[in-house]
Amino acid sequence: MSRINRRDLLRSTAGVAATLALSACAAPAPSAPAQSAKAGQPTQAPAAETPKKGGTLVVGLEAEPGTLDNTVGTGYHTSIIQRLLYESLVGFDLTSSADVLPIKPVLAESWQISPDGKVYTFKIRQGVKFHDGTQLDAAAIKWNFERASDPNHPMYFDKGRGTSAQIFSLIDKMEAPDAATFVITLKDPRSYFLALFDKVPMYVGSPTAIQKYGNDDFGNHPVGSGPFRFVSRDSGSKITLERNPDYWGTPVYLDGIVFRGIADPTPRVVALQTGEVDFINDVAPDQIDALRGNSDMVVSQASIPHTWLINLNQRDKPFSDLRVRQAASLAINRDALTKDILKNTALSATQLEGPGGVAHDDSLPGWPYDPNKAKQLLADAGYPSGFDTVFALPTAGSGMLDAVRIAEYLQKNWADVGIRVSLETQEWTSYVPYFFKGIPPDKGMYAMANVTGDGQDMEKLNSKTFEPPNGFNVGWYQNDQVEQLLVQARTTADPAASAKVYQQIEKILNDDVARIYVLHSEQPKAFNKKVHGFVNPHSWAYTFTNVWLSA
Image 1 (cartoon, one colour):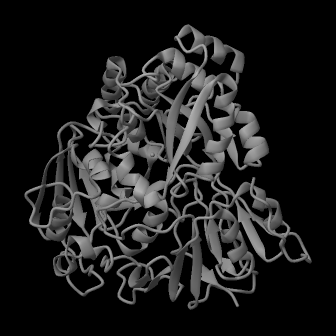
Image 2 (cartoon, rainbow, N blue to C red; image 1 turned 30 degrees about the vertical axis):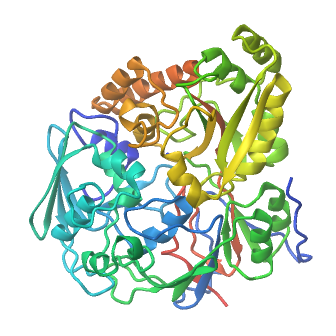
Image 3 (spheres, one colour; image 1 turned 45 degrees about the horizontal axis):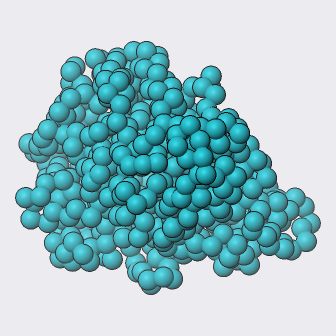
């Protein structure tokens, strides 16, 4: 099996399951309207031109990147850089325009899955070298995975424990019988397991470099096997990569890429318009029209399995009361938020899975806007005058869109029904470790962007197994029926039947108000028209391996 997509993944293992008010900047007067790239389609160069090697792409990210260590996930904006430096056994093909992205071989040329769905045997690609010239083989892969999971490993590094534990807690043992063979045995079947290799803790770094720099400093000197290699980092300013001349795969066109963290959406757009950067992600809604009116720009949106959601503290009052959770959800005018505030760059959310996710159910209505019903529920729950609570969220980063502005809008909605919410904001890199500790008794809500669509998110957010410090169930949600259905879903061979089980779970989560679902992002990006070959995939992630620059 060399190449599969998510739906194929459901079929690949017999006996197992079907597989996370800004003002517009003035633009120069255009001579023609901007190009508009359709979701999943590459930007096209003129017919007479062919891709050219050379040039440096400058990218404006939505937040300052975190550590570049291969085991630590500090946000999806950081992982855009990590996936250019490192590789894993398999990964999603981000250059594909398919509605459902295929999984492609990377460091593994091929793999086999045992009939019981528990043993994965990978044939490792030979001749691959890390950027420091050392050999990448099965032993190096095992060494990396144990570094992220085994406290007895000499270089054990637990800073990425939330994501690492989510993955490695599923594994019974890992073996490297020879340089070209790597075997993983799971504790029980997980039909979505291959999709997990696209997560940061599954990227492979040079053991030699990790030992040389140590755990605390390797993230400042990352060494992988990817198509780009690390050059330098000026903290708070930029990260520079260059083409890997010894890359085993198809060489990239670009000489290099410079990444700049620009957390404020308005300066990020200004940087694009003035030519300081060539590409930006997470375009602020109020800037979309200005960019579309600029003939030097391309604006692209893509529907992705992404949900902006709010985790609720279900262990402590007031959100331990179902009526309060219902009221908090009924208080939100999602349609006005997506239309008036986000300028149709997002969709109102009715459930955990966004469009394209295996569990998404078009028939599930979600919670409507009904402030009067919300007030009545609060009174029934013993809060006729409302209550005070704290909502913690990041200022920007990793699929959070314009997090603070969205939160301020929600704050007004809640105030209308008597829920008085104080916003507690942190920079993204500080918020991540704070988040994985779980919601404490003195807090009510934590913001999150869920950006997967393979069934794994259903488990990581809703199973007791993934309560802090082991994962994403930071609101301490528990439901025995959901636990049973999660097992049933991942051990059901027929994909259609498995999807139906996941949809049953979605309905229970909706009835329980397990969390508040706010919106599904369409991930707007913008870039200079000199940027060619970029594909805006139906995914939270994206890559620059196909990109080239014209004069």
